[in-house]
Length: 212
Image 1 (tube, rainbow, N blue to C red):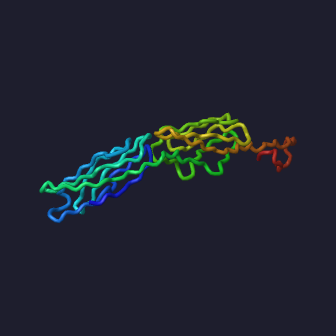
Image 2 (image 1 turned 90 degrees about the vertical axis):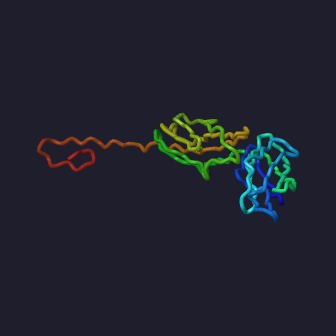
Image 3 (image 1 turned 135 degrees about the horizontal axis):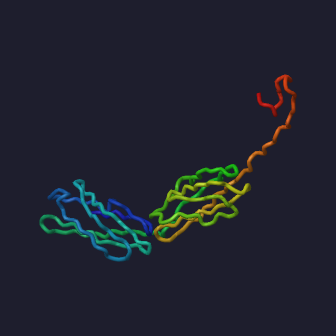
């Protein structure tokens, strides 16, 4: 039996990963009995231990937000009750905050609306627990954000440059603040054409102020 060391971050899960390879001269690998128990460390759960016909032992690993590097004793027993034991090392890295960014920003006309999506999406090594508008700056219109980090703008105002702050928090409490740069452009000015008076029976008007 040969162990296969694994690495995962605090607050994350690895499902059905290989943790060892096993062979036996006397019987098929998938008829052997495999078991695992923790030897040192804390916060790491090893479950769903299985072995396939090729002798690959798989299991699911789950690290809590306070997990530390841990080791497990893997035991394989054959039909004659002969056993072999090895130590599997699981290295636990610190939790990483969510990944969230909005690139160069976006623009909209006063009173307008749009949806701004994060560049590369919203991701985390564990799970996202909340996404919210942390600060709207000088923006007075409507702003909302969904669980995918998509920011919806409506009734944009006032005209000018606004920096909105969106905060994403993961299942271990780590957070990332991302800035959305929003430019609200004023509506183009409307110039009323001069009124032109004409007498009845005069030729058809050809000025911008007249309707035919």
